[in-house]
Image (cartoon, rainbow, N blue to C red; front, side, top):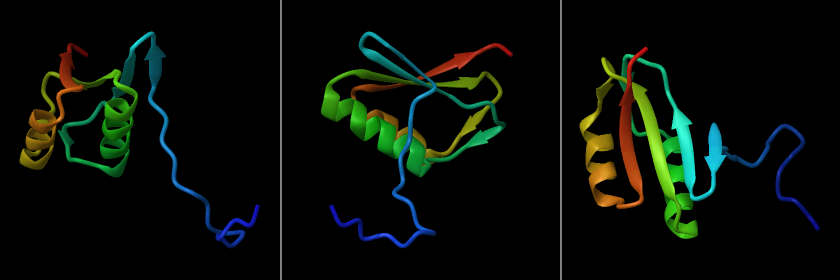
Length: 84
């Protein structure tokens, strides 16, 4: 198999923090959260595999408008807030 990357380049990949039966968890501890490649990739993967994707953030975390819209459009993705 011929890989089209040089030795300095690697293929992007993302893994959730925790995987249970039909749920993938990604935990972010930050004060502001935007729609990142990691969140986008894992949400798309969850839809493809038909499993729930739970994005956990602290209660004080501000969510960008782009991320809010993305969560509304993807029915397998859920935002969950926790107390620190």
